[in-house]
Image (cartoon, rainbow, N blue to C red; front, top):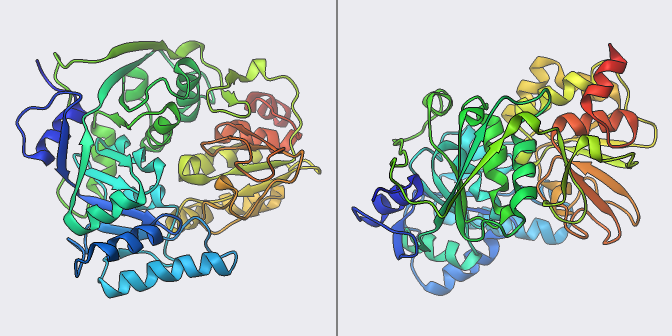
Amino acid sequence: MGMTITEKILAKHAGRQKLEAGELINAKVDMVLGNDVTAPLAIQEFERIGVKTVFDPAKIALVPDHFTPNKDIQSAEQAKIMREFARRHDIVHYFEVGRMGIEHCLLPELGIVLPGHVVIGADSHTCTYGALGAFATGVGSTDMAAAMATGEAWFRVPETILFVYRGELKPWVSGKDLILYTIGLIGVDGARYMSMEFTGEAIEGLSQDARFTMANMAIEAGAKNGIFIPDAVTENYVRQRAKGNYEFYVSDPDAHYKKVIEIDVSGIEPQVAFPHLPENARGIGDVGEVAVDQVVIGSCTNGRIEDLEIAASILQGKTVAANVRLIVIPGTQAIYLEALNQGLIEIFINAGAAVSTPTCGPCLGGHMGILAKGERAVATTNRNFVGRMGHPESEVYLSGPAVAAASAVTGYITSPQDVVKEGA
């Protein structure tokens, strides 16, 4: 019996010819990632191990993106711990404010996570890099510490669910809508400790940015990782930015899957996930009139240039509703600059939006857009748990950038098609 792409990548990094789901392995890692929330604890544990230096200063990335620019003394101290550790150990991929971006937008953009890699990060959305055909997964800070010391991590080889997306997408439907629909279908624990492998003709037509969005939210279904078979779209993305060698893996025709789920995308509308779980997804036609106080467009899920282009196409020539705060957060400095060059930032500001330097900020209830009691937000982020963006009695509705931008204009959750028609 053959192997899935996930099994092949893990086998290669474990020095094995063959692996099966359920096996416990040690595997070499190509990149170890930490941010200003998780890395300080990992650094503390690393120092307790007693080794003198990291296994490879070029295979560790430290990205202070959650509470930066520092919102208070505590966040400044967290960032200082990272900064000093990076200096002591000559960490190559340390990114200071002004050069950093949201970690899961930044690392692929810089070409330091690549197809065929094994990547672990002390952040649950490390699974984003599966969009490139890498095995990427989140770990705890103690596992990060061990990997910084040894260059290895342990895994139980996950079983795989194959998701086959057929048909043609409706207007305004993209990766965020597909993954919200999928999580709604299987639930937030429907792929618990499994690999979600995405394929089908509808996937082949997705941009690289849309693929990042889907892989990013695999964790919201409980998955160990989400992964795409790399193709011409992947090659076009990595060829121009790769900082090292990479390898394309494909699943064997006779690979074993826990199950195969086929989805006809032609009937999927733009999706909105209601509070307080990503699985509470419904089509925009079933939302009703839900008034909102805040709209956030950005995050590691939807802060890439395609997302900003979609939002700007709806906001151009329009004004944000008087009772709504619109916050736009480009994922990296390069994305910010590209948006500036395209005139997107001008569109956002003319519409009445606040545009932020790259930061995770409001996504985790950190800063740059905290919700008060009773307030509602539409966000292109990845989680809408109780209190995720602020007060425990606030509400977060998840959507793609098209629905978010349209909702900012009307003041309630709105189909982008309705706003585009009004502006015609």
